[in-house]
Length: 107
Image (tube, rainbow, N blue to C red):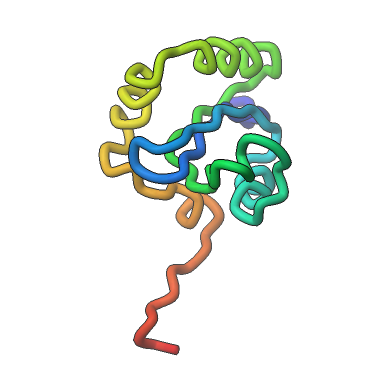
């Protein structure tokens, strides 16, 4: 079985907030860049730093095509895509990157 090398993803500013659709070959690195404000332009200006949806692709041309299609979708369609697998709009990055949540009471 081939390892997935490309990812189409959606980051959001919050539930039903600003959305950014992107494509990358390194999802963890790319979302880290969103989270630290290292992506110039729309993403930084609108605070889209919460990974709410992603999809693996084996081939770059498939990933680019999917990204372009989703970017043309209306917001309600994007919301439905997100909510099909992530109804609470939870940030998926911590589990993906194995970042432990810090309990404020344990500091």
